Image 1: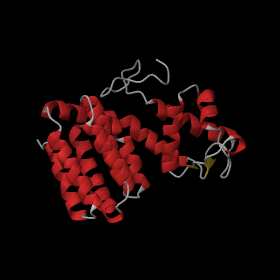
Image 2 (image 1 turned 30 degrees about the vertical axis):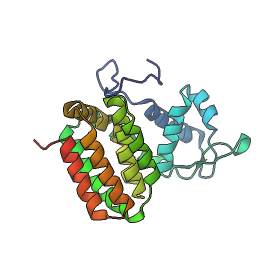
Image 3 (image 1 turned 60 degrees about the vertical axis):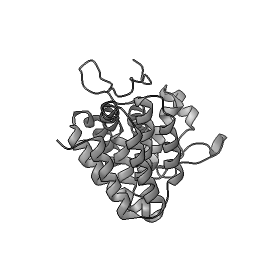
Image 4 (image 1 turned 30 degrees about the horizontal axis):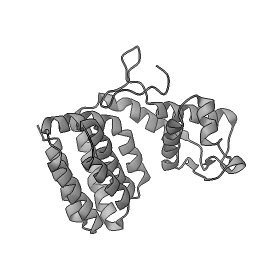
Length: 240
């Protein structure tokens, strides 16, 4: 398996030892971190462009793009548009422990129970929904995810856009750390979410929940957004 091989939706990549393997973008993150340290790059230096990075690291441009998004979320780089010498992200801080900690979190999530993941989601998403309702931001991303869920052809595709909807809520909160944690949770969320959709057999109630959450955030109704998140997660993942 190459660094860019992808597992089927809902599965976790595992190496020969049986332990979970990092996703392609996580391997890119680790290699970029090591590369920054080895080359002695300092704040203000520019990384190579997306295409050049993909060629040097022998991965897809989508993996590089996702890794750079994570680095930008953590405040390690600032994305810059342009071509030639102006292409590539600018280093704004040394990666340090923040990136290492995020990588360890990603690699360790496969061992968490469903209840641990859902309880963590509840805490993060209720806080994020409250702040998103106050700012009324991220609505376009949420609306696109809602429309994509309506058009989904199966559980895996529905869950892909469901996750995008919930990530958009955390990003709208304006807190980069909660957004990074939700991104890190995606693999575990996906495994449990596909099981939930298959168990429910119908996504109409889940979509009704999503629309209530969206409407509350759009209308600036923080209290309703918070309660709607709790109702939605309880429907999808009933307490034992």
